[in-house]
Length: 269
Ligand SMILES: [Mg+2]
Image (cartoon, rainbow, N blue to C red):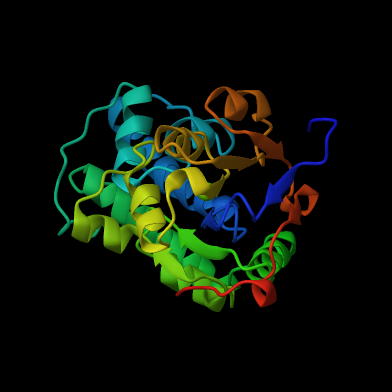
């Protein structure tokens, strides 16, 4: 944290784009657990086939370094590459359902599908929590006349927002389904954020992005956004700043809001 109170001025920033996992909803740890279950099963199978023990997925460091904030397939590829493992790509038809000890079912698509299944199982069982300080910030911004959006690389975004009862707090949602339909590359490419700004009818320079991942901050920086706020949930403040975050907080309750109010301006929707 800087010595000054970090602030967002709605007179300068008219639209605010919130990343979903880890910023709006407390789902990053659910994702991390699903990745660990998926990769550890795979590494045990592969280790058995090779006659040695392969180190398990590190739920903190491997998660931050290779999969956090990325499209699922890229996460699989990047983690495997880091371990020097190459798998066939497979296809969307791979359900990834086989856990019977054979290696034949292991493809990039199969691992990604399996990870997603574990994630959905978890949120189905335990639900999804929104961060209270994020909900309070979104409400404050909207009261002051700013427009808000939820963004995610995930195709599960609508389901996650609905499960957390926050879907109505956002004017716009852009998610993995939109990205697939429009052929948008994943973060750190800025395409997803630029599409969101376009739908909010805001120039990137007049919009803020709030992110919790290195890939997300880099994407916002490359998109030329006027304010980039990083929520540091992984003790990586210096790296978030280096990639372009203007403000780094540990919780969005630290961010104060100033500027116009809805009742003093006509909001053109
Ligand atoms: Mg995130």
